Length: 140
Image 1 (spheres, helix red, strand yellow):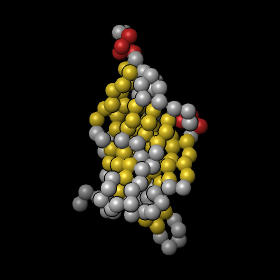
Image 2 (tube, one colour; image 1 turned 135 degrees about the vertical axis):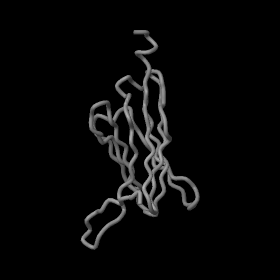
Image 3 (tube, helix red, strand yellow; image 1 turned 30 degrees about the vertical axis):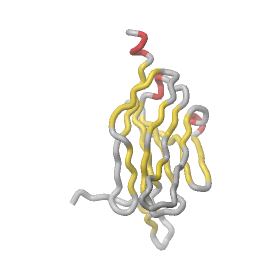
Image 4 (tube, helix red, strand yellow; image 1 turned 90 degrees about the vertical axis):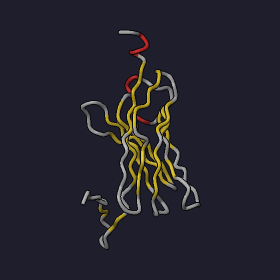
């Protein structure tokens, strides 16, 4: 196998958008990088929540999505295996029309980083019993 092909990373991002007030949008397509490069994956979101929680997940081939990290207005968390080279910053603005984002940065990319990456927003619909409900978007 050619040396350049072994060092090629392919990262995919899928677009997901909730219906209603909250939405998450990722850029469609693949990101191609060489090992050792820094890679940034974009995630735009919109919510009325004043303390949003944003999450990143990684899904390798034939695998389930793995929790990577969480970012919120007043705190953050990284899973143990994603503490060294993975980071995200929650970018909030006070202007309603301005974009909010939580881009994921991967330092010193490796071939094992090739995967599908998902950005998610914490569900914000709650009942009187404080049980969180997932907002569902129906096609009809």
